[in-house]
Image 1 (cartoon, one colour):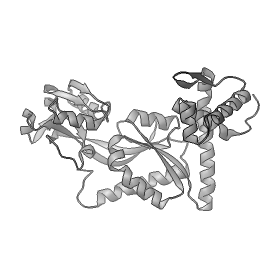
Image 2: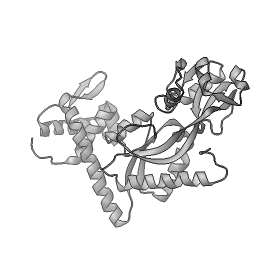
Image 3: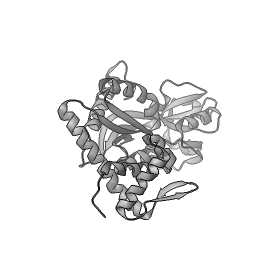
Image 4: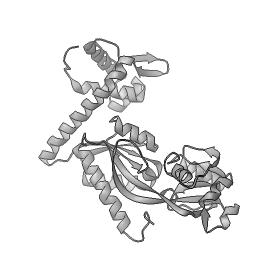
Length: 304
């Protein structure tokens, strides 16, 4: 293989791998599809072997392409860090930061957070990804994201900056027998049909089951927390949700504290030892200040 003549073009291959489509990659990068195809052909000619398999269902990496995608992402990150370092020296604080958010943070924090961050750093582009804890952590680990929100229950090799605590609460239909409780003893959870929500089912809620030695009677398992809340309103079972999900909402259900009390610790994760770009560091520092200001304003809403 000859030396790489234009490292930037290799980012096209990473976008094709992520989107699974030449057309989608072209739309995301602002190219024509034929332009994307030519770039891929140039890379394959430079490497000396095929990198993309094209089929009716889309485009995917060959086995050799899979071996290259990790170093290509590292190359992209190195270029971004170099560019960001130069900008920081110049005092521009520009660049790009890719951030993963789980649903309650995306709904309740993201609008104001991103509005304020972009007002303070108008030259930093923010790209958002919404997913579950595992998805966010995986993308941070393989460098598709610079940082992401998660909880302290993670066991992955990531740097974790604690932001705040968020109570885990039982949500039951108003006509459910449990609705008569002021606090719901955790051991009673296994006596009712449980609607398992998407956010944190393998982390925070699972920790409740393990701590109290509960074998839940899972009736439904969903990937969306708000869908779980709607099913509770229909009387289809009970659920456990973080307080942030329930913030500002009311419906045909009762929210009960658990006995004993449980909470999740919300934080932001990034890769350890490799460092983060100046833009990502600016974002993480801004998030810490943003959450601290929320906690200090008015009655405590996020730590109880």
